[in-house]
Length: 241
Image (cartoon, rainbow, N blue to C red; front, side, top):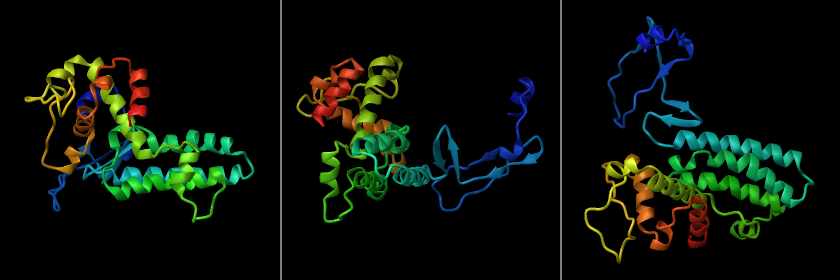
């Protein structure tokens, strides 16, 4: 890094530089790192391109942060639009709150129920605000259905499959590495465009984007996986799910 900075005459603010050691071990050997003779601070999580990555490769820190940010934004909307009609409240929620909960969600979608519920709880509060229904005897699922608010988990699944669809048809060089035909196929169980599953020894890998998307892709019917147009695929996928 020092050589690269010297070559391209790049100056770094060392106070803003840090390093993170990624490991799932309970006790790790810590090595000091320095740049230009200044020690770097070790951190347990780091935000990069809007995504918070932690040293255990879990999405707990990221989801905790975005749900807190989204909740604060929802509170601001509730205070700013107390008398607005439902369609305006819904538009504000979708624009300023849900967009925060879904940024790059195809990549970090959680598999743990408590994290899934943490995200959906924000939408549940938003649904009651939009409909002005604060009676907890009323089913929040019915409220969301009446407002046409699809669960965030389902929306993440759609986003994940749409991203995989684009990779499958638009990046042929991936066919020989991450996206390859299965060793054995069964037309009864899989579609004609099924992909070899990826298996790892940890949930951090098995529940990540590619293994999860491949599992879901293989379960889709031929009528979906043979559609090349991304817009048409998404519309048909929404009808299918």
